[in-house]
Length: 198
Image (spheres, rainbow, N blue to C red):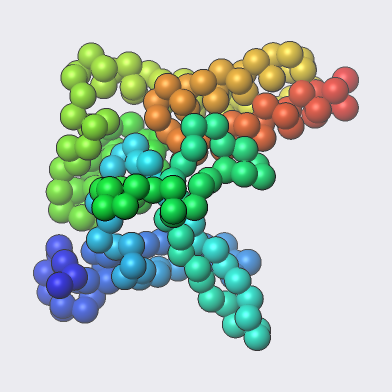
């Protein structure tokens, strides 16, 4: 039985509770997709799996392949994930369905509003002191991303590379594995941009 949360019309309740928002088709429009094969995965704010929604073209129509993947410790542009066979049989699978970089209070509010529960995953149930450290890390990540993505010709190659490396370190430290790939291209890209800007 597929769970609902909001009440009212049964079909609409199931869709609102279990659907995912995604953009596809070359348009900047948010679309809702319902994926029965993964909707029963448990939520975790720091999962070991991510959902890949791969858009394919076949005979002029769009179709999608969904694959849950196990993350490896260091992600790269070309080889970022191991396929399903590497996930232990009968192991519990978790999925993140929110922005992992959101602070604790925002994640809790979003999760409760959309799915009706308070998250008690390993990241949300840590001590208040460790929670504060995590919040500071997330704040630092946001600041660093803003600095790196707002690149200017005044930045040196070394400082950009160092900042990108620190960003990757913060992702690892915070177990933000599914977004860690954001940092690695920056580590390579920004020193190159700094070189051409000088």
